[in-house]
Length: 405
Image (cartoon, rainbow, N blue to C red; front, side, top):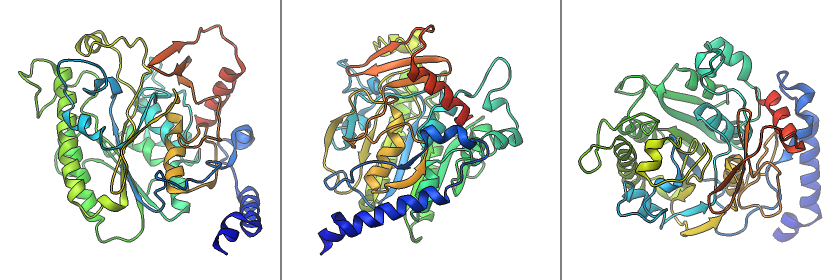
């Protein structure tokens, strides 16, 4: 009887009715209008998961490390030292993805782009003064508030509360942009003890996450928490832990991030959340390939597109490395929803779940940074598409810019 309902004609009728209801009741944002019809979908994935990758009803915590490429991890490339001992160990204990790339950069595009599975032309700063970090709160809300369907929007439909903790000041342009994505609450420096110039340190950010989690212990219902620690930002040094003699700021900041993450992992494993929560470790985008970075990590990266981590830890998770086959972080939101079994919701997602073998998207291997486009494939191969290329795929990506703002 159960199998008849879940896979037979009754269930098929239920699915058809639900899809019809979604289509009839959905009203696109006036900021998008009919321009988004080509990209509009009624579901997130094709086939539900019925194996080790199904985590229905779990809480989700996502750590979006600032500018963190996979090659920084000690077990990613042969070298005589490692500044990430905790991540090295975690990578052997996690469900993880290799050959997974950032679909855009930098932070404003990377965070919003992953949470909406889309491209975004406008980033933080521009010479013309039109970047998001240069806009007022009213201007940011006018452009982005209730514009696209976001991961928090869909989670809310299924009973989740969603939060974001950013290391930046609570009323900063970044936090203001995040608030437009319909989180129940966006927190930042000023909501917790401790100020550190224009942002919280990684130590303060992970302490804030612990503090916030303790406040959720007796609350009912699942939650999603996004976290943006930015101590590894380009040009930063660590104010706390130092690597070896402390003479290399690049080593220091990544070592400090790994150290503070390790302390949080210890707390997480001892907490009541461990068995019912997915902890996902990824980044907002890859590391900017500066001359200093390439020398410090023996990197041959040429572009601001590279492999980034996607590690999943928690109770009853079987360690395994899955191949993303060169797909990019447009897959982030669909993958999380796939793991949670959340299939039906109107959305403009461009990416496919990394676990969905039936879904294909032409955008899964196309990274876009403003007007520069890149093709990603296996084995850390990134190719810049010539500016005179007028392919239909790039034209579609450019048309999506009108939707995302």
